[in-house]
Length: 501
Image (cartoon, rainbow, N blue to C red; front, side, top):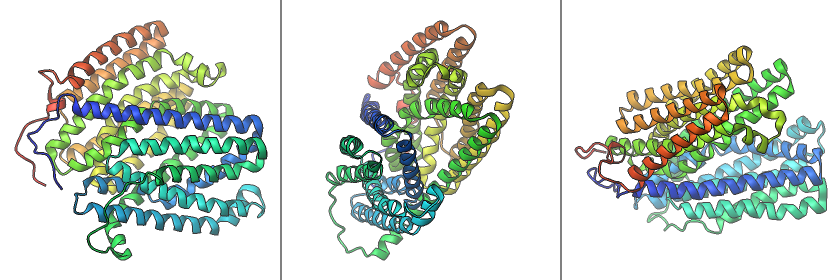
């Protein structure tokens, strides 16, 4: 694989500009996707009613369960191999990913048909809806093809085309569904889900990346051999998702029995704000960060450079986001829900503190995926998930809803330690002092905003947010976008001898 010499440093602000550009593109796409999802659910609620929402949830839950199981994490695991491939091996790698998409999709479709009767009996109490689950088999196949092609786009850094496909898939699925909801009522739920799957596949498939065929014919057996590492890593990722889902289910079930449906709803609302909405920043940046890190993971010097850069950049981006989230928590809750949900504000305040630790651990954890160390990834994820379950139960009993926010922060504190052990001790990687310094500054600003909000009110938290945001924007402009003299280790890294592969 061809790499730039280690002595080269990024052009002034070049790396930061690329990251911010990709973040803005995919952040916008995610916002549009969420809006489309909200509109779709809102229309179902208005035109069809609770029965439509229930049916929509049943079919989507079944679809998500089968997709997560049968795709074996190919969407994430394939990116690593695609990004690391050189011009000689790339055609065979792309062909392998696409073939695996077909094989896993067909296997998932067959499994869906085989489970159609049991799923109908479990969800509806009869066999009358088995044909509905059989129809979902087509969506399972299309979802696998869409995932494999999306991995190709991301691995080859075709970010604009990937974003365009995701955008048109979401908008197209909504546009096709609206007349169905209006004309067919509850009978439109299943066709709308199928239509969304078709639109997503068409939007990605119509702009699929054209790659030259391999110079030598690749048999299916050879493709399976080439894709073995992808599937193994993907299996570990799938196991991690399964463990997380089980832990979430166990805690929600415990909370529902312990405190009732209302408290469970408050937990879900607070967790969504802290984990999903703030998490949009992480998801948007990960699209570019993961394949870039996978290209250089065999070089300690360049891994240090990229991880340190990403850590500093994401922290500076987070400072205004998290401090203003804390200062405006009441307005935020009111906008997303209603005044009845004001009780979740302590959860949001302390949970946001955990977001900073989440960003730190996030930057390190991608090195585990880039290395392809599925066992280490599974170990860190499983350990943190079990700890979070215990902390949530204990802290809720002691401090109620606020305790669950503190448990969230403590969760990512432990996770940071776990991935730090792998990153620093097992892999022998390092992080620049500048990256750690900015992380500590971000954590201090977030804790200060949280303390001000709790003890002095939103006005004091807003003052902290203004000061922290001004410092963040100044540092971002001077150190990352202009590349002024004295840039520091976060962009330069440590110069040294060329790392061996």
